[in-house]
Length: 368
Image (cartoon, rainbow, N blue to C red; front, side, top):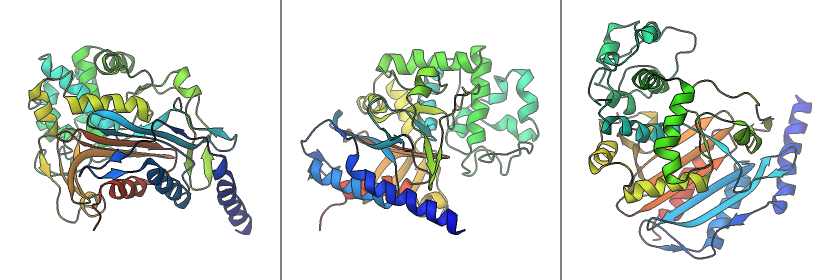
């Protein structure tokens, strides 16, 4: 026990010693503006970020803020791979975890616009029969629609582990956060497009990434992504970057990106580009109100869920967004389309969502 404590303390002290050696990239020294149009000096923002990274033992960070539909602030700080003192740069790639869901919902709307998918039709109508044994353990699965999947109202669990996929409530009647639901929709898209995980990645690149100039954002990693990827950290433990490329399209968890590239998508949302007005309305219209005493409401301030986007009540502001956590990585984005304001960060530390909430509050809480 003493040995473990010694190495844990040594890791924390080493971070403290190394913090002055951080490589930092900043896009601007101009003020950044809050949702209330209050100016925040970039120097003050950088100081707050540094304090929080030290407090929460966050090795590395990539972050951007958008004002009036334009990139207003970008920074990278800390270490992509702490053990090798490899610093985060604008080219460092992070796991985005569950923020994948919002991007996947956006991609799904292209199939809706192409007339290949109806948001309110049974997904079983589209599903290739060879995939049915994965999902047909409860006959109610035939009631599940794409709208239910994207708003977490399927009744599926978040993850089932090794168990058969069960439904805990009548589909469409309640809220239950579900990664399994998103993966069900992946198999439906495989069926609609007559493809596999590689083909669905191609569709994402064709419809979303390439038109928006997102050169470093993928659901399915390649060698280039892996070479530039940060290592994840859980407490004092650092996980080496895996060389194994996923063979599953992780709609619920799989996106790899960095803040500059991801900002291109956020700006597209702010400008309502690529998709129709009808699709944007569908994406941001509340489908389900979050129940009282839900962890999402009590901890995260989530009021409702639309299609892939949650609606937060934070620091006196109603705003859309999504957070994410894979083992060793945390991410979050917030977006206000009417005010053309957005913020996104990627960190290679586990379960540090408070960083995003604290940062949003620091920027957007009106001074008394």
